[in-house]
Image (cartoon, helix red, strand yellow):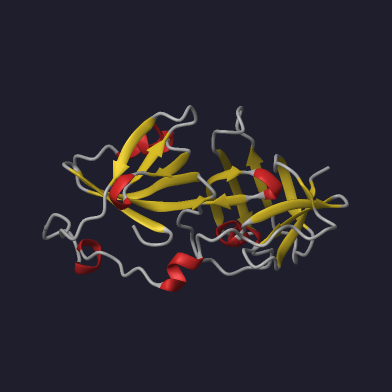
Length: 224
């Protein structure tokens, strides 16, 4: 694991994906895999998708927990290399370097500005600033329970995007964003906000996302 990507080595091969963690909440998704016997099509039932939080335990380890606080897995630091295979490049099997910059990404983000009111994103929204007539949008499916993780999908007008997200007190927000195509066109870069968003709030009738420094990423209006 580095500050936003993970590789999970299992007997069948390797699952790859993204993850975000903040203030005791955790969300991840599997977006790829290497290994003929890994059932990538059933990734949504993988135990990683049940993880919604984390807690520090003894000796620098972390427990990954579900929405009820039950421990699903415990992660312990190790200096061992990952399993070797002709299918794995060196970058996959070498532990990432943890820097002060990496640690800074897990500090509490700046608060919402006074004009923004905390809200849970839900429904289909259109970017306020967009060009052309392509179908540019972000759509959020709110979880049935606030302790669970939601899903999102969207488009910049030509390239689709999707991922998972969680919401916390005072507009806390974090989302994963899986791989996407890179077709150039007019529209909006709204899907890219998801990776950098740290808080979300309503400013008037606009759903507005902010990065960890409190800088505005962009705003959406609900589709009529």
